[in-house]
Length: 206
Image 1 (cartoon, rainbow, N blue to C red):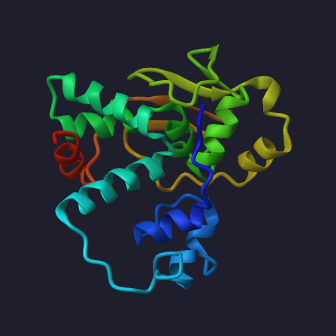
Image 2 (cartoon, rainbow, N blue to C red):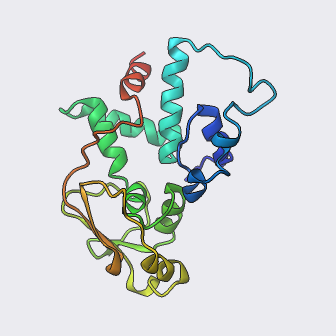
C-alpha cells in the first residue's frame, strides 16, 4: 500500500494548523506549528490568497493527511459515501472514523494514527477474535477490537497498560484498558468537525 512519506511536521505547516500526526510531540513546545507557524519552503512566509478551488483542494489534502490516506483510497471512500442514502458529508466522516487504524488510535492504544496503522499491519489486533492486518478495514457496530494475547507481553503494550490515557475517548467506543480491548457500541457520530466536508463534496462534484 502506498504511503505518504512527507515529514509529518511539514504536512501540518503546509495546512497551517495542527493535524496531530505525531502524538505527544503535537502537545509539546517542540510542535512545528508552535515554533514556525508558516508554510515550509523559501516563500513560506509570503502571503497566500487562495481561490475557491484552492480552499476546497486544501480541505481534501488536510483530510487525507489526518487519516493517512492516498488519493485513490480517499476517493473510493468518498464515492461509497456518495452512494449511500445518508448525508454524504456525515457518511464520509463516519467511514473515515470506522477505519481500524483510526479505531485503534481513538481507543488510546496508539498515540498517533501512523503508529496505529503500523501496529495493525504488523498483525497485533483481533476483530471479533479474528486476526485483521488491514488498516483500512471498516469496523461495524457491536464489533470488538483487542490486542492478541501473544502480543500483550511486548514492552510497548506492557507500558501502555501501566500508563493508559483515554481522556478523549469518543462516546461510540467503550474500552477496557486492563484487557487492551474495546467495543464499538454505536456508529461514529461526528459532532466536532475537523474537516469541512462541504468543500470536499464541492471539489469532487466538479
